[in-house]
Length: 85
Image 1 (cartoon, helix red, strand yellow):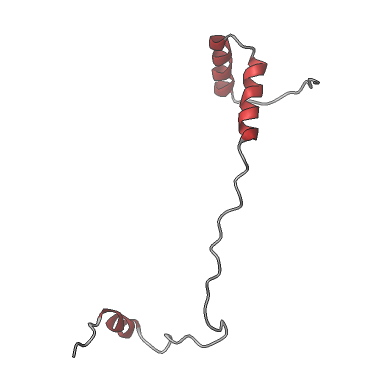
Image 2 (cartoon, one colour):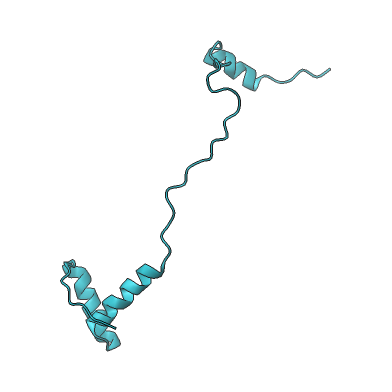
């Protein structure tokens, strides 16, 4: 197992917290950072953003059957009560 030396830019507050954690747990800072990396890398990468499946029906090039109606006409059709007989 090899060890590679590297330099990282870490926010001061985060580094201070990591150092305090290392001191409280009696572990070297390197071990705390390595454990954090292992935890992050163990989580599966989330899939791409969810995309709704295409559930279209009918012909996409056909005329819109609702285009001939005004909003008031459509509202009336939606809210009218069915006739009982």
